[in-house]
Image (cartoon, rainbow, N blue to C red; front, side):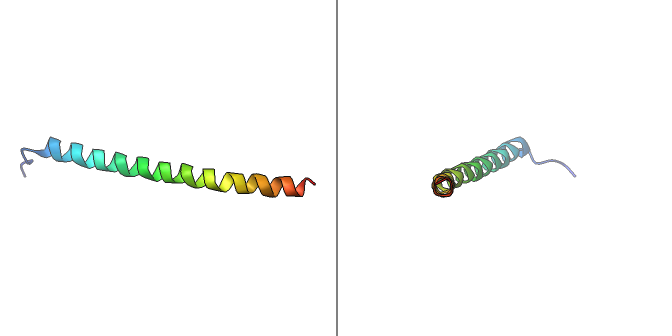
Length: 49
């Protein structure tokens, strides 16, 4: 079976989409951790009193 003439283009588009999705997921994870961290710090300081 012959490969499509634009296989390289399609593959690069898939790779870019995958990288964008991975980056978005990582950014969401970091943002979620930033929201959770201040709450953890407040709870920890209350325990130290």
